[in-house]
Image (cartoon, rainbow, N blue to C red):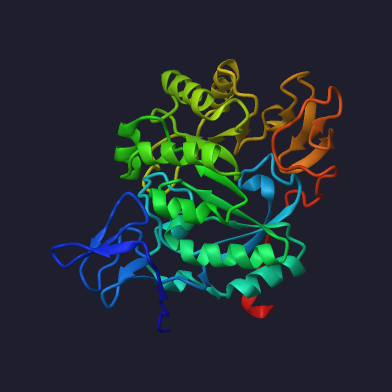
Length: 358
């Protein structure tokens, strides 16, 4: 199949005749026919084009908590999809078969933004997630899908590493209702050695989201034994979050499992997650969660004032819901997030969707 390409506008020509892509801090400089590090943005006829517009690696209805988002329309179904390629090179990638793909056959399903929005509405999804690979690299497609979804009353969610340059960042998040930002670690050494990227642009994205947008966002850190899980690093990271983002941004510590180019590591012990959660709470963060393990205590949402459970969870299943008008039912303290008076009942179901058949 011949690939259709889509025009982009975050690029400029430099003095030596190459064209520089300006979407992310990598600033890839391309000769005719070359692709950027992400693989999906390419130089074609003296411009940078997107090669994956309208094509997906697959669609699936998930619980919104799987993104993970615990304070955004709890219990509701979200239509998730990605394309191919990524602008990070994480040696521990958990979706490497999609994000690291160099085979366009990975893109099995085709759909226009309008069709995606229609299918999401027909299937009862409250939101759509750009996930599996980073939507930064297919931002034109993601923005068009978000706009089509908004026209149907469906919200848009970015699951991202936050590695994006300031100008495209402003445009991209203008169309997002929520985001989960993957903060890979909290040292420049870890970022450079394990992702071939840098920490500072990600911190700038987090500050931008907090101070200059109304996007609801949560943070996830995958804790890898011996790499980014020291008490010192967790102390510094959670203190930075408290000082720069405030106490109310939810933080998820998730367990690593050996994958891709990091199969020599052991899975994250639950004790590491519990210890990290305790450190974050001690440093003033109100909403700290554990993930990729069975831990009802670490997955529940608690009122930061009276400390009673507001949302009780068993995995992705909501067992108790004690929020009304965005406030604790017991002491009436506001709980930050996007809540309705009744949660959804999607549970833990995972439902693959073939859009080409709908």
